Length: 46
Image (cartoon, rainbow, N blue to C red; front, side, top):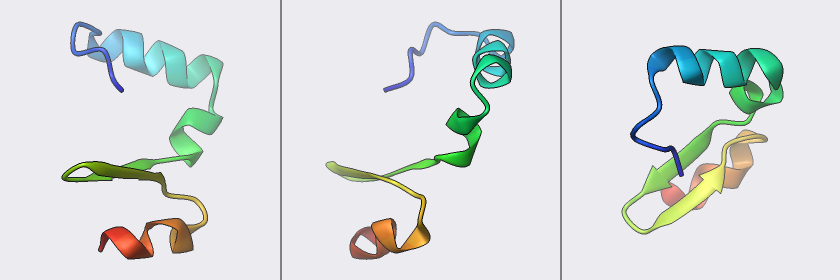
């Protein structure tokens, strides 16, 4: 979950410190979520 109180600068700083955050997108569909890498992980959400 993303803290809605974080600023864009805070999010960019977190990604800068841990670049894998950007490589591992999280796909959310209604009440399910999956880590989107590899892309096959999200097929059941589409």
